[in-house]
Length: 456
Image (cartoon, rainbow, N blue to C red; front, top):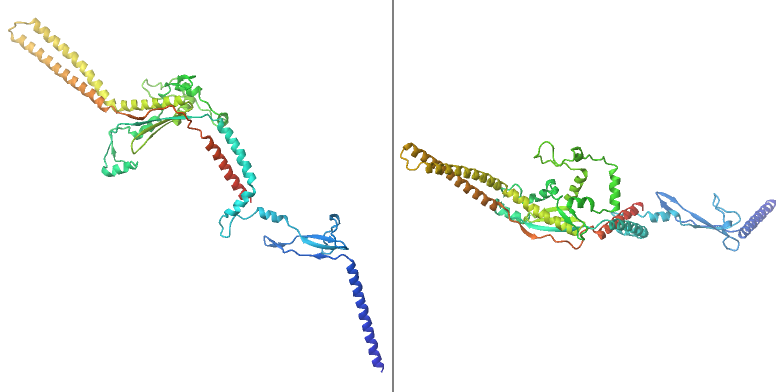
């Protein structure tokens, strides 16, 4: 009986403890309902270089469910709780996402350039491309406007062909395609394909210094050397660049001043050594660049082009170069025959003088020894007559040689056919201002685009 009462008491105590514990839990639950509720959402972590990071922003709500002011917002504690407030954490877009957008890969999965991504990058920075191209375009336009215009005059010649193909049909077929297979036989040392070397030689260009030239407006009439030295225009930036570069170069010596102003060498009167000053050497180089001679290997047509700042001057120089080429080639082709002519003509004069002496001696002897019967006088008369006949034969032979040499000069004189005479140009040939500006703008666009893509 006592045992049963004891069990009943223990059961009642357990029930009372459970009720007390339940009341305590309800009290705690009621207190929690009176306090702010903490809500936290975890964002999917973002993978950056093999590490997972998550950024959160806490949003604290008051008891009525409204968010608190920014100054009342408190960061999360190390354990992720906030006292006396309900807070909700929300993900915040990190700055790394913008950097990732800027650092977009331009290679696809196969390791090749993705033009679509590159186009997106360039489209995003279009203002930088436009600004750089605009600035460089304005600078290029200002530079090219200061550059003086140039004109080009051309002359075409067809010299007499003194060569013959020695390779048969194969050489003719190769010549039709403009190919020289080296089977052309000629007795001339200066062939048409060597005319460009002739025109660019210093001896040929120096002969043009004394050429009289006149500008189209008629304000300048002087020799070509003075025209090149005093009346050539140049842009300001080219002059400044030339002066700037001259500071890094050694000052050239003046051989002409060291030689006492003499044009030729002092060792011999027949010396062909030209002594030029640095300025004259610069003018010769400018003429070599302005005067161009080309030969068509298929038809052996010679084209002479002269570029100058004045249209009339370039036409005058082109016509003069044509005339000098013809004179030079004619002198070369007829040089041997001309020497032969003067040599035989000299012998002709000597033979004529000797013949006249022999004739005079014979006639004088015959006049003074008429009606002679002595054999000694007759033998002397016959000797004088034979000597006169010998001198006459020599004179006739030299006369024939002189006439033959004269005919040979005419035979060797080349015949040049002028296909196109020099014409004063109307439109300038350069510089190409639009092409110059567009070229710089295009180069700037490419460089800027490459730099943008590399940085992205």
